[in-house]
Image (cartoon, rainbow, N blue to C red):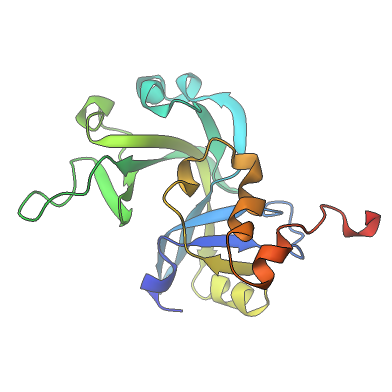
Length: 191
């Protein structure tokens, strides 16, 4: 797959992916190039409120103001993901200060800047502790082994208020066999 084919898309863990770091996860790919892949798991909220780790940003984190576990790598670091209220019009500055486009109206936020710089520009915001990362070629190998489904992201996926249902919901909206997999039991041996 080319770089543009993965950035901004979702990786949905197959039912056979048994790595506890990725069991039933949905990963939003933030960057994919020849050096590797970076993403965040969008369906693992923690019990830690944003105001405990980034108090200045907590007002923007509602209505679900919890830190999400973005992946198993660098859990002591934070990434901010935000959706713009509107894409810039032709002739306007392409991106607001402190926001870097990932795909469409989704982008990463510079959490070192004052949130007031972006508050009027964004409609949704989430904080992720850590990230999911793959070295060069690693994700392609995992895709070849059938560990992940690659699907298009819907606008609401990154900011759903029901992240615990994301794995099933994303699969359910796909066509064919992937929709059927949304009914795959948590433990197939009990079926």
